[in-house]
Length: 262
Ligand SMILES: O=P(O)(O)OC[C@@H](O)[C@@H](O)c1c[nH]c2ccccc12
Image (tube, rainbow, N blue to C red; front, side, top):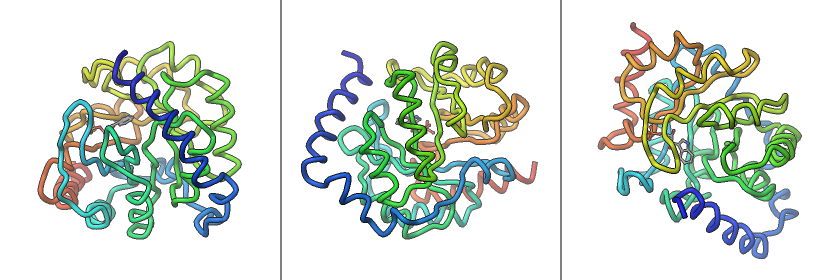
């Protein structure tokens, strides 16, 4: 079994258990459920940096990245640095994240927050809303076309933005539909962990213009971003490059000021 299959199998067990602890009905009673939220897609369209800065403690490909930081400090640092949006990993077993991280992030920043999760059930979309997210991630490689449609339409009805992640042409062609806001190209193959920015470059022309294009993973230089911009990308998801330092916010600040000065 590849790592992605293992994550998804564990996720199904986790979600089934959670439903028996907190019902979907209860999630809908969260104060944050009634929050109107803000659109990351709109923010990216008018942003000069386009950086979506991620809170990520560890990953299956890298094991430990940084375990010693405070979520609030990190995301507040990102916002102050001029990030357009924040991504918060909520998977516990493989990424060391939690829904509490999402809640703390929500309490610390105003900019749009993406719940970074392996979504395989509608319940997780209600959770995202109840814990303060503005955006959900849907990963094409783990979902059928029907699921992508059903999940993205539910998200839209809750005024959540949808970022659909693909890694190849087949996934992209399966996924294009009007209920998506952003198309993310993951430069990392989630099955092998190989990273190549060429993935973003190759798929760029295949993404229709009505979707905001986001390049994800393995981005560590402003030169890479400037090149990706020529392919039409307006969003750039960066985790490890910021998180591996003592002060991710300060690192992001340097990176973003260099980017907008160029
Ligand atoms: O740390 P990086 O290489 O900058 O990557 C960030 C982000 O793209 C990556 O964490 C990610 C992209 N898609 C995912 C899906 C699930 C978990 C994690 C991810």
